[in-house]
Length: 233
Image (tube, rainbow, N blue to C red):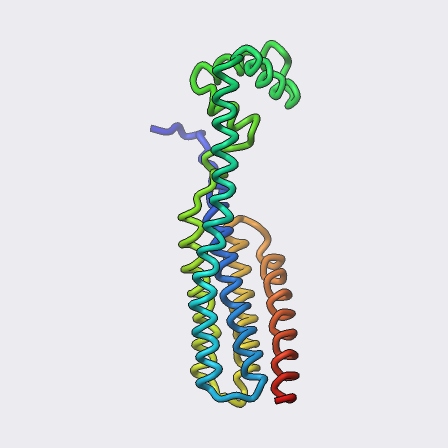
């Protein structure tokens, strides 16, 4: 039972892993698919070609995000595993040196020598490798690489993000599809930025402006390319 004065703090750093992958996937899904649709539509082609390009972009983008995230985060996991193996061997070879190393870290952070040594004693007695992983290597349960989680989160969020401009292109008149896709996608990006910032505890306005600006730039450049090649053809 918790006391009346006990404070429960709702920190959000445990969301870093999946939130980063989800925001990246959804943002990329909206921006890349909307840019693709706008670029193809600007080339003066039919609705079927526009939708086909959008569907192809959704499928290819989802698979690309999953593969990219899995490979990238797996590399991080391999590095973490290698560092932990090395630290484990160092603890077995010279635990006294490792104790002094850990105490030195705490002294550098502001503890006096006696207290730092006591802290190092107690933490290493409970979990020497865990203490060194956290305080020497910066590896904790919050930041540990999770390749599968990153892969499926990115793939699903990309597909969801990409479906928004794709549905817009399906429901709007072909003659105005570029404007509808561009406008609604900017709204989607602003909402995504707000949600991501709110979930992470950051400023909502700043998050919305950040993703909207880069999305608008991407769609503008793609529309220019599509219009150029469409005119040439």
